[in-house]
Image (cartoon, rainbow, N blue to C red; front, top):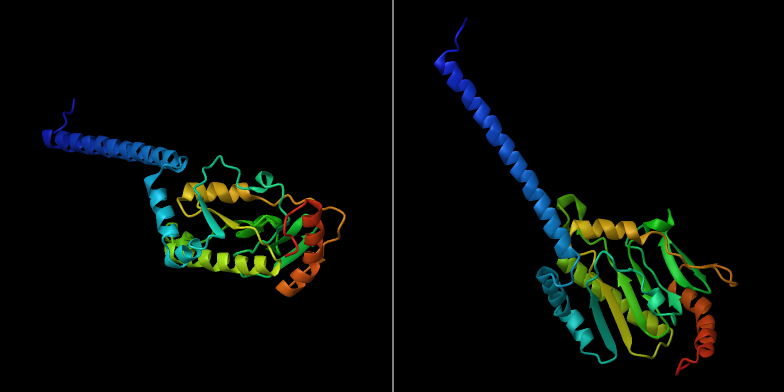
Length: 251
């Protein structure tokens, strides 16, 4: 019977101990990762997240936006939505008159208008919409800007880019609303759901899907410029505003 030499036994025992320690570390890393994911999901699912509140404060204090907010006719709502929130506010505002959406992609967009509204989407498929505007006849403006995150660098949030882009789009929306003579106070609804963490970003991209815009009696019209948009849609807006009894619709 051969006996194991003590030095060989000690070496083997050391290897086993190292393997056990590695397994423990690996298990701890796995447990820590699960805990981190659970905590992240928990934080992102609640609007009381201090990190998110800080972002809201930063956005509202961004000088160009702060200047806009000083206008009593402009109301900017920052909406920290959770994963269970319906991202489409359409049902909450039945008096909507038209859509104006703008895809973030630089690819050629398709502009369509029917009785339900004016909207755009990237030419490939309906579900490639990245950024959109909803501009309602009562002055409510809703916007989604999801793609200001650098996927190649661990989902880095470009806060300055987001703020400048947000300001640019609000100014553009004001100009468009002025073209349509929208007179009520303007409400801006800005969703923060896509400038947080990857979980929310991914979920929101999955939820967005194609927009369900019913086609009514009016035919679809392809429009490639703002002047064409105004020419095509303004008469219909006047009819709809008058029909719903909107005050000052023609001022």
